[in-house]
Image (cartoon, rainbow, N blue to C red; front, side):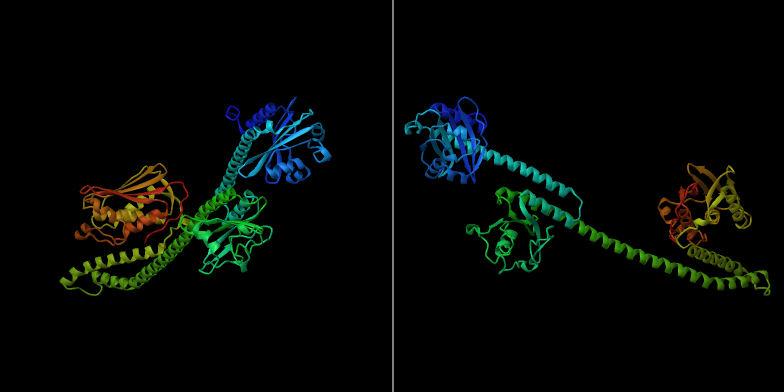
Length: 586
């Protein structure tokens, strides 16, 4: 219990070997393992100094040149004899030490039915071994063999951990990359082949009822030939169906009939490979295909299967990401096509609207001019004196024709603006002078007596803008202010500066605008019910056109109003900055 209760497996083996040597009184005691095709020295004790050949390995074929060892391994019984160096059948480096041995005892150690190790005891003195002194060594040796097996299991677990961590690291590099789909699966296949020490590996995608390779190996060898694609129907390849739909793994070793779980006509059996490991490649919901590795250098293990399943699961997540990206791109392309078609339709409607406004304006202008001319002649008496009742009607007709002419002019102006402002006509403009000119013109045309329109300004306010467009805007704002201000109430135009902007306030003395009506002011052909009821003439295009012209120059028009206290419309234009042409929603 003391010998095996502490330390790692190799320390336990060293203590047991020393214990055996001291209790049987030998010069050397060596524990040698038999693992697959190799005989390896695991632990040794030598009287007078540490051994120098622990770790040496010999092929099992070497046993045929060592009769004592061969007899003990094959029979499982204790064998007694001379030294192991007789006849020169040993390692030259070990021969001098072995030739000094006179008596040898070989104790086979079995775990189960197989001899997994041997305990070799030797004496330099001419004192032979007797069976009675060796009987208890098999129990001690069995502990050493168990420690040896434990050491192997620990080593395998550590190797599995290292391989697992290496696998996760290499896979995560590919998963985190932003390469194209074909490149990703090609690199992942190369990584999988390296992780499971196989000559090649590859993904096969399930397409309909066929399995198609996603890529061809770089060496030019075909993992799956076109004529070997398996048909997965009721008479097809049942082995592949189990991998695809039941989640089973499939291993095939050629020449080993015990592992031939696939039929001779199976697609995997027809592959040009000496051994194959296939695992399912699928998402949580549907099978995508299979991941196959061919020609392992050391034989496929359970850990290889685990690594391939991990790679297949990670690749399925990446596949879903690529599929989601393709769907998003398809939806984006469809949305772009829809928006482009909508934009083209809107552009066509805009053209049709402009053409209609131009045609209507031109067609109406001629009869309006003709009728207005005759009305003017009637008012002047050029066509003779009119009856009293007719003379009263003519001024009303003249006013209506003037209103109609104004409407046609604004329709024509709107159509000619054609969506974009004329940025090439921008130049340095004195807003003070422009405001005074507009105020004077509006005052003179307001009728008798002239309306008072005052201009308040510092006299030095300038802006870079299109003077013709700005004059149109201010004329519309001032004209509206005059219309909605009762006689005797002043209209004020204030030119001022704000940080980065030039502002012009046009304030009237009217009844103001209700809050619920403010949103209707700038709509085309939009007029307030109060103005219509009061008989105030208008087209409903002036404010709409003015705001469009302001926005086209990088500015805007705002309004503030309180019912019963009048309204203020403010034009703002950027000062000293480049402006991109906007759109006018005519």
